[in-house]
Picture 1 (cartoon, rainbow, N blue to C red):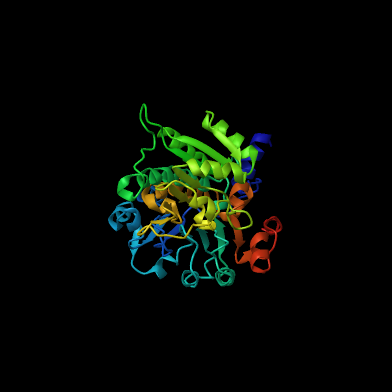
Picture 2: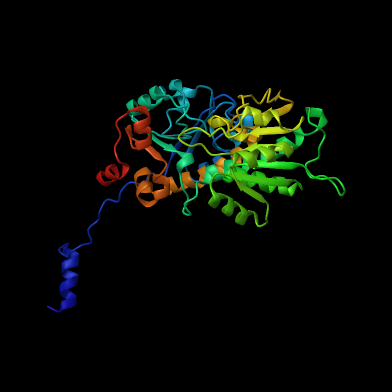
Length: 406
């Protein structure tokens, strides 16, 4: 028999070797995403805007939104409904979703609504100073996988959400200061940029991080004179390079700072916390020697503040005076411009969720994206953050060891 006839005979009789058909791993393409209404004090942002919800729905994902979740950011239920989201009035219905995405950390009441049988994922901020131990223990009990969006890194090693919120806080702080300088708000009637023949306002910025850099950009854009202080010279050098122009910079030395504060019209506190709290570098005596009608904006009030005279205020009553100096010490300045801030959050969350669906689920994402893994602080109820474990005296395991077993 010829070889061609033999192959034909074997094929027809079913004796010819066939390609093995292997079962492909199931891809978690269809996500079920829940967006609850924020209950934290002065939190006006929403995690996903209607445009982002529409994009997710068009890619086959299901989105459920608690009624009025977008109201503080001026998004209506109709906006979300037209984008393809399901609107529910009971928060418990939202917490049945596989992925819960919210801005502020969950309260103990919200954590109780998680279902330990569903292997749920929570995206939210991680605020070690304000997040109670009981809440952390309950998340462990509910076997939730928790991702801190403020610790997620992009491929360039940058924290995208922290960067966006810093940009918003820096820009907004200068706009607030410009308003506070006016006579209407009790200021001494100084225009930020001045005019020919009249000197501009003196702006002192404490901290050369993200907030300080964008505050300096805005102040320079309005024509103000800017002085930048920080306790690390490399941050000052980096900010100068990013600004692309020379401004006065100095290490935080009390004598130099005191002299700068005496001549300042505006002081922006934007120092980063150390060991959980912002260092208090401006004493009450320094504030008492500032010009009458000058303005203090303490952006660092979220972590304690860097002025001895700082007291937490609210969006409803944001201003108070001490020694004739106007103080603005409202936590979470980004919530003052909640619509812009919500779009900034969505710009990070939306591609991340799309990649999570297309990439085959959380575990594959953790393996393929080290920056995403950096945000995971709890995996199926197992604490993976050493800092949280030591802070709350809770058992924790190394996330790399857990991933090796996945």
